[in-house]
Image (tube, rainbow, N blue to C red; front, side, top):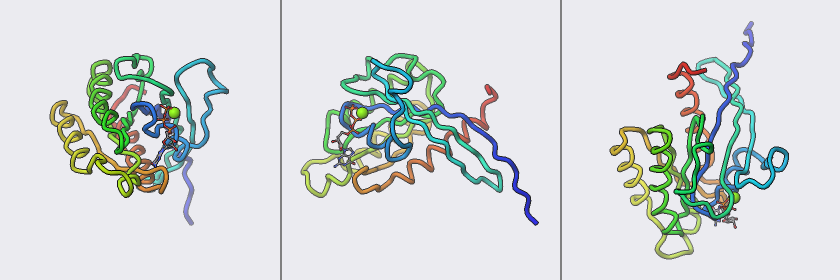
Length: 193
Ligand SMILES: Nc1nc2c(ncn2[C@@H]2O[C@H](COP(=O)(O)OP(=O)(O)OP(=O)(O)O)[C@@H](O)[C@H]2O)c(=O)[nH]1
Ligand SMILES: [Mg+2]
């Protein structure tokens, strides 16, 4: 007979940043469900997403209660305030492969985060990879990987790199899995809670 242990609950704050139009809201909706922002706060430039999800780890059941913060509208790296990142367990920095400006700014988003929070693991997400089939001059995989490698080296912290498309769904499961692993690692490696 197998006995079911109760699940361990983990609360996680995830922050998703990146330039306007890179697909932050789309990716959050796909992974975490509809935005809850109207129920919580009005007139902010922050959107909230929530999801509870159970993962199995070595026979243990872990319930992660995600609270995801993301920016809306014309936000720039230098506008990001400490409150956005405070207490974050993981940060996703996004760019769109068809938007060179968003790619150049991705590095600046990470540096803005680090300047306020100190280095922490980051996931760099290259979104809209479906557009590589139709649009010329998209950012290539090697270019994204190179930035991630440079950031990891410079700050001595992992900067993971994942490519996604919210149109085709490619990479979304991989992103969610990595996110959960980072959160579990962070909770196990700190004694703050
Ligand atoms: N082709 C393609 N379009 C996408 C993808 N992800 C998002 N989009 C489109 O890009 C546009 C912007 O997506 P959003 O999710 O609103 O982007 P955002 O980063 O939240 O934008 P702001 O909130 O304005 O900063 C929308 O028209 C989406 O349908 C993708 O993977 N592929
Ligand atoms: Mg949005």
